[in-house]
Image (cartoon, rainbow, N blue to C red; front, side, top):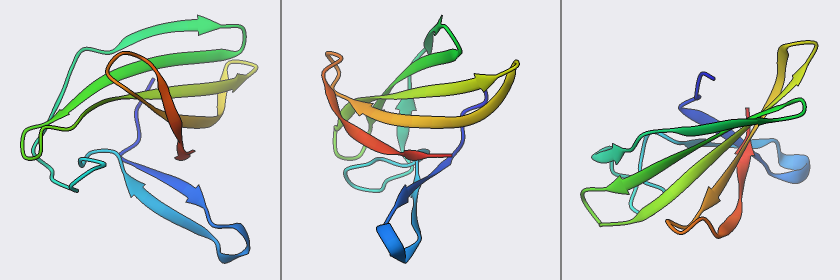
Amino acid sequence: MKKPSIVYAPLGTRGFDPIRTDRCLECDSSDIAVGEARGWTEGNRVIEELPVECRSCGASYKLRYIGILDEGRRVATIVDVLSPEGEELGWLGVC
């Protein structure tokens, strides 16, 4: 699955806020190390988890991409943030 560098968090009636996934979520540094992706399929969803570590501030987390498919074509991708141990920290956005 192709991983986007920008996801969008909805702001209610005020539109969407773009969030860059190719930068650290803590300090916004572009000096990050992305580990090896781990992926699997559940029904009509393709799921991939990527470990990320920031070389600037030391933040460590995982990004989980959930691609929702319909008839084999991607409809949407949901992005969640997880702790390094896999604990879900919240929803980041969609693309």
